[in-house]
Length: 115
Length: 115
Image (cartoon, rainbow over all chains, first blue to last red):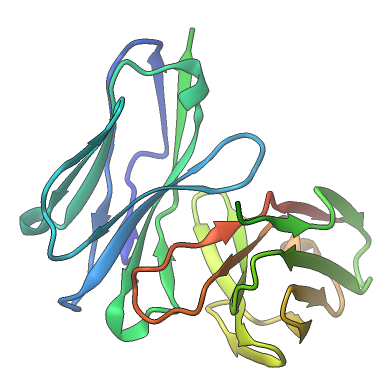
């Protein structure tokens, strides 16, 4: 079974629309971390955020916000007022404390923001 | 800023060739990783190394080997390239992992085509 599921393969929006990228994870560990990475066309994955399993507080950073809900095992990512520069592939990842050399990545969601 | 440099952005090889993919990081990180990225499959771990001359298999090590003779350099070797190894290869590094908290720093990737 996949540890991290990103059901949306590709999303297209028009600039200034809000968009939410879904991430559902599966773990039996009580201590774990969730990550979001952005991969622009240049190829390099860039770290966006990290959340630990004990902190369910939602986080906002500029136009970006993250909603972590343990009850539904979800860690969703919302971009408000999207811009063309947000076009990229976004990956959600999970790291478990009992085997923290291992990162489980979702299959990625490609976001296309059209002008 | 951490810099992870992969020697080639694009590479074209013939079936049966021995292929070397090189990765260098400049932040004295203990851990280095090789991932393979394929559409719909996300990132899959091939090998990782937690110290010079130390390595561990990831999820898909078959057909690959690695070498880490110096701390800053981690090489991925395809002993006899095959067409099913056509993929994007991503190198990553991180400081010593003491918990699941550490994030990865990625290179820009090498798009390998095996003809």
